[in-house]
Length: 90
Image (cartoon, rainbow, N blue to C red; front, side, top):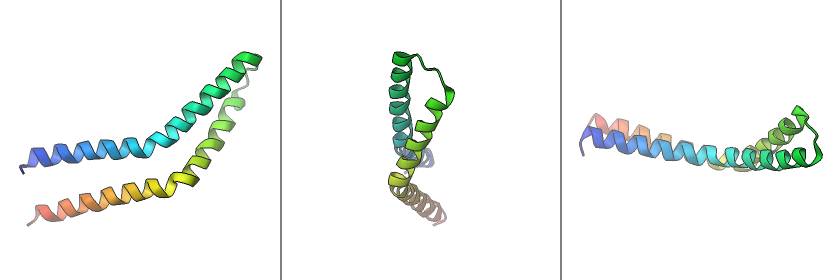
């Protein structure tokens, strides 16, 4: 393969890994924000900490539960990148 194709393939894989790592945290935060927003709209309670604290707690739980899988995905990708870098010299 030529160099531009390898770089584009690597950039594509990098974007997918980034999306897979960020998606659980972002989706959990979105869901909690939506639920809290609906509750605030129904009760007319507009307290800033009411949105911040549940999001923080849910993000912490998601990171504890899925953090190992996220780091495994990142480390696999890093290993693949380093193998490709080592293969360039040969």
